[in-house]
Length: 168
Image (cartoon, rainbow, N blue to C red):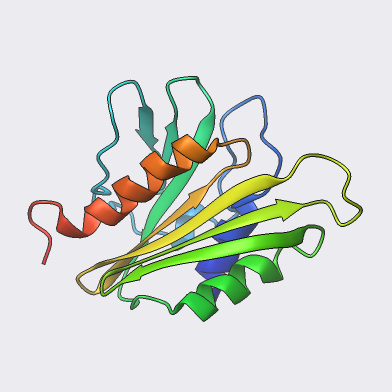
């Protein structure tokens, strides 16, 4: 679980690229051949694609890639401390300015405001969520460049996945 969180953390704060966001570097051979669909419902205008590796990527109506999500099979919901440690451990080049936690029985969301250690450059907000889907866990991570409002949409969609039809 810590590896998945760290992989999402790394991806969440890398600079936005002009093309599609790059996967977290996990070889596709390590993923199931036919992953189950990820139960995310985003508003009209959002563009969602799911790769052969089962990783979902979403872009906002303004065309900005803002979300990477994937399901980790057979792992439980992490604690906020585990999410925080895994996320910030991979971001030694950035300074955490603040964080907030939202937690329910089946959902955890952590938002971070991150900045350059020397104060140069604008701060950026990042989101990391974990949603219990029975014995599986949906991990959602924002991509650099997402606005606060886009993160609100992503957080709600990831939280609502726990109550999607057909979920235990």
